[in-house]
Image (cartoon, rainbow, N blue to C red; front, side):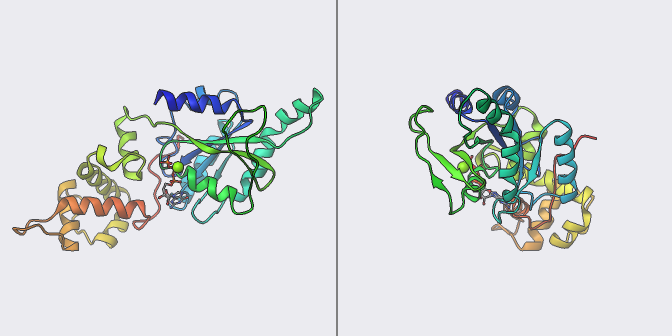
Length: 273
Ligand SMILES: Nc1nc2c(ncn2[C@@H]2O[C@H](COP(=O)(O)OP(=O)(O)OP(=O)(O)O)[C@@H](O)[C@H]2O)c(=O)[nH]1
Ligand SMILES: [Mg+2]
């Protein structure tokens, strides 16, 4: 982890703009706590990725919150490519002062350089691929920058360091850890699947009763998480030998369908008011 952080720090020295990829469903929980320290004073563009899975109204509110904090942001769907076309304009604008400063000391203007940062599974690779597209030219190692780094010239004349920097989320905060688990940012082996799915069902039952009533046909939405999971299993016909409901299988299905957006579009981190 220390090595990864050092690598990110080294790479950050090479760029003019940091592109911070967040999960639009959890813009706060998917943020690396060291981001401000790491990115320092570099201009930053925030990507609210997987916006196709988030509540559009909440995404709009998050964009306002971020703007007030000084960070321009774009809601992106890196699968379909929605939003990625806006990236070059933002980057060019953010890098302009730096490029102008270079010109002012007699250097030639150059393409802005940027790097993509984010915690695991927020969609950095998908985002980079969409940005790079098919028309990108690999500009190879830049002399005088560093050895072994691949730069890619992407549409809109910006240079992208094509290795995304992986950062780590904050897992000490239990609520954030739960949200990271639900959205798939932390490995399935290291969290309590049953507890997480139960909590999610309970939250949906309390806040979006129609969604789960329709999808899972659960009658008693006020029931405990264990009973909600059992109801899902019974409904879907998940039984183990002996006739008991396979609630672990229910849990797995609930998480899977949530992540695929089959239960609807939800934002788990509410924007601060
Ligand atoms: N619905 C949806 N899914 C996305 C989007 N972007 C990425 N994904 C999915 O999210 C998963 C992770 O995407 P990656 O691009 O591999 O994520 P990453 O940040 O590069 O992950 P690491 O390399 O592990 O750090 C993949 O299964 C993608 O299909 C998006 O905008 N919308
Ligand atoms: Mg990746």
